[in-house]
Structures are given as structure tokens and as C-alpha cells.
Length: 147
Image 1: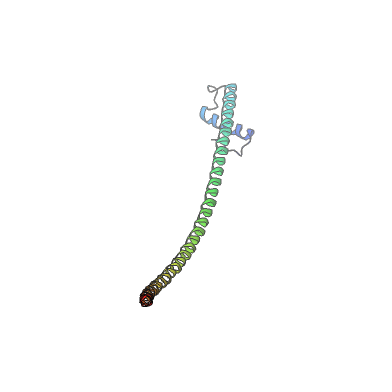
Image 2: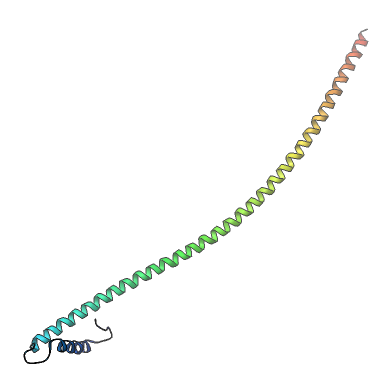
């Protein structure tokens, strides 16, 4: 694995040391041009790996950033919903209290109206009796007037 802080020259020296230790430096070992070709291929591979790693890291950082944004938005939405719920709850309490007060007021009005109806029914009966007596007296008076 390569160190991203190394430049090409430093990386080449490190690769040379690795190749020398792996294949040796004796006369029966790998020729210089083969060593250079191997070093060049390894350097290309490592650079390509670094690019791939950087792309993967950039992609992952972007995904993390996107997810953090989504989380922040969800937290804001949750806070907004929580506040909305709290306000709705307060409104509901207020409406329930007002409704209970209005129901109580209307029930009291109904009781008062029932009292008035009962009183008026009593008065109506009294008036009916009075009218009946007057009608009877009128009948008697008219019969006396005929005789």
C-alpha cells in the first residue's frame, strides 16, 4: 500500500528497495531493464490504486455528507412536527375547555327554559280554569237573560 504523502521519486526509491529485497541484486538475478519495467508497472499500479482509493474516498465522503444532510433535515422536520404537535395539543385543550364551558352554559339555559316552561304550563292551566269559569258564568248570565 502506498503513502499518499510520497511523491513519484520517493515512491520509486521505495519500490526499488522492495524489488531488490524480493529478487536480490546478484548477477544471476533480474536484469536492470526488467527491474525498471517491474518498477514502472508497480508505480503505475500504485498510482492507479491511489486514484481508485481517492475516488472511493470522495464517493464515500459525498455519501456521508448527503446522509448527514438528510439526518439534519429529518431532525429539523421532527422538531417542526414536535412543535406543531405541541401547538395542536394546546389548541385541542383550549377547544375542549371552551366546549365544556359552552356545554355547561347551554345545559344551564336548558334548565332555565324548562323552569319557564313548567311555570308557563302552570299559568296556562290557571288561565284555562279561569276561562272555563268565565264561560260558565257567561252561559248562566245569558240563560238568566233569556228567562
